[in-house]
Length: 130
Image (cartoon, rainbow, N blue to C red; front, side, top):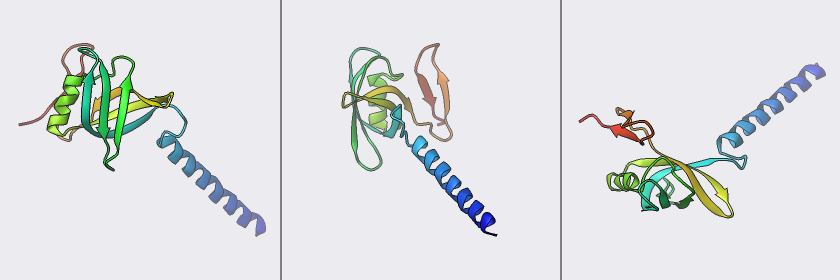
């Protein structure tokens, strides 16, 4: 009887450890890429396709400030359109030298819309049913 009770305790402990590991992994707790979802507050262009500065407000009201090191998949003009329309974005980023570096910025899929590419290598467009 003691062996069965002990085995149950180990099983519970194993399940708890597995659950905590999944949660930490899902939250980006490995020092790698992380992401934040929110609304565009400001987008400053470096050139036609690259962003110099991006500020995003998450649901809690926190303002996140990102810089970039190249093309992140969305132009500043496209992100300013999101700012005007109130459409959200997902920013994948990494921390480097105390700064947040955006590595990918993409639209939040809106229910009832279809995403297509303009041409190979172009940003995704969101087509809304009217």
